[in-house]
Length: 115
Length: 114
Image (spheres, rainbow over the protein chains, first blue to last red):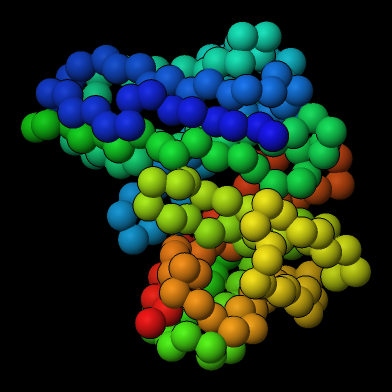
């Protein structure tokens, strides 16, 4: 059974700092890996999707990397802003399901950016 | 208007009652999913559907049933609600058809079972 772990569970940093969120998964047979953002009272918003054949994806100040063989992914946030405060979730889809049979999520990292 | 909508947004019910959560989407996606989120446990998959005739159980389907009434509608039912089904429920969609695409989530339904 796939298990996804996110470290740290919570993080508080001053505005302007660069930071890294970590995600690890136990089964390397993944189809893709996704990072989501969750704001209180709202649904999940997709930030980045990395296919299993890719090493990284970038969107603005966000960069996600994937090392499938070691079962790890990182989300790098550059020049953090108070608006980045949210819970960040990592999720993987299985290779056998072709990415279709749902996602396995980590428990998330609760991020607070201090003004 | 939101692409994935869920009704109701909040619901309080009593143990033993039947309750239905509804999800509608305007994205034209074939695949739809139901997840629940519990504090400290993350999101877990309940059921998923590839089309109106293809329904599959997820990790935690016991105590739940679903209905895919149309491509755009996917409902989750709790036949006899119990307190440990108190959670935040999310519906999600994805395109399917060989397209590598993310899942799009609704705003969630917060359910409290007394």
